Image (cartoon, rainbow, N blue to C red; front, side):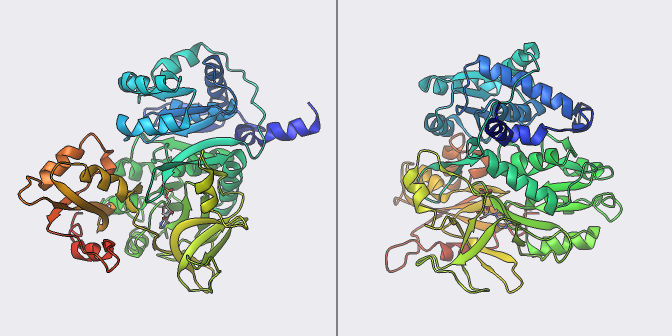
Amino acid sequence: MNATDKTIAKANLFSRLFDGVDDLNRLAIETVDGQRISYGDLVAHAGRMANVLVERGVKPGDRVAAQTDKSVPGLVLYLATVRAGAVYLPLNTAYTLNELEYFITDAEPSLVVCDPSKAQGIGAIAAKVGATVETLGADGKGSLTDAAARAKPDFVTVARADDDLAAILYTSGTTGRSKGAMLTHDNLASNSLSLVDYWRFTDKDVLIHALPIYHTHGLFVASNVTLFARASMIFLPKFDPELIIKLMARATVLMGVPTFYTRLLQSPSLTHESTKHMRLFISGSAPLLADTHREWAARTGHAVLERYGMTETNMNTSNPYDGDRVAGAVGLPLPGVSVRVTDPETGAELKRDTIGMIEVKGSNVFKGYWRMPEKTKAEFRDDGFFITGDLGKIDTKGYVHILGRGKDLVISGGFNVYPKEIESEIDAMPGVIESAVIGVPHADFGEGVTAVVVCDKGAAVSEASVLNALDGRLAKFKMPKRVFVVDELPRNAMGKVQKNILRDTYAGIYAKAK
Ligand code: AMP
């Protein structure tokens, strides 16, 4: 190996994560059912699974798609894919077969991993692109782990360049199809290393990991930051407020979406005393209400640290570790990340405190959308800034504030819901003329998906019939919480539906949902 080859080998995120671990016995992950996985175990498990991937024909650059429940082998699959030089493609467990068909045919993976109960349905889709199927259940059992148990732990990490792909995560615009955000080894490594520093992670930290691992937050921010710091994480299969409060007695950090914080606040066990071992509470993926920030500080004595990121860019800004964590603000640009606010029409940079389009640039920003060169071109400025689609401002102290999403994206429980997708499903129903889907403030979910429907005179369309028809076609988190049947939708002079008027009309319907 010459010097250049060594540099390239080191660029693999896996090498950057695990080369030079000083103590292989150091604890990396513990589970609620008592498993303890050391750094050495994790490297060996990833080696076994990488050998299985290669046996199944996965080559560097191939996609490995996974729709699996959260489990340690699920995380190992991500590490093994990266180690084998392939591209990890996690899929939300809520996606139905109808939705998976698009992702699988678009990404053309060579291997698809799914729950044993879904092997038949997903197998039929995978066959269309010639992909092999392996199974992995919530209990960590399946054909994938069976094969891994028989495989050798030694595996030579495949050399990759900084700019090679490590993962594709599907996101979506407010209109059109979902887009696969291509993330490189360096996008992921550089951002996590910067967060380790910014949030003062050390090998003494114990993270309560309660986020799903098919999304950038739980997969990259939580897992990569912990592993880079040689810290450990307590892996929870799902969000469980009482268990989390119990674990705080021996943990140091929690990363959550705002819904975690509003739910935890509902527990009388959340006190100064129960949180006194914790050093940091981080929130992101959706706006944390200033009220929640204040209530949390009053109850626990901790100021939640809010940060802002997105699938395409990893993390962009964060409130400071020392210094003011401002309620309602997402903080300062991370080191190496440039943030500016521009006029959405002209692209001209705006003065401080002026609302416009947030744009970002840095090694955190993705390479582009999978097989969508035109879309990629349209969302980058000529000087390399990515147009986030978020509207916001930078105040005089340099803090970034997000004031609303461009267009009408709804974020419910931390998940993005794209109105157009739900509207198309509703509009296709017999008797429906048109529909508008909006986000309405919801005390628990941040926003509740709400559908407003116009139907033919005398058509038997009701809230129940619409919900019934959507059941099984849409992931649960996208399902409207309420459906209103009305005579007509408000429109402006140009014929555009005025969703702001609808939002005002229905504001308050979920206010007392706690
Ligand atoms: P995702 O790609 O699913 O991570 O969603 C990214 C979007 O979530 C961003 O473009 C923002 O609109 C929103 N978002 C993420 N973090 C925050 C935050 N702290 N406050 C407000 N919105 C946020």
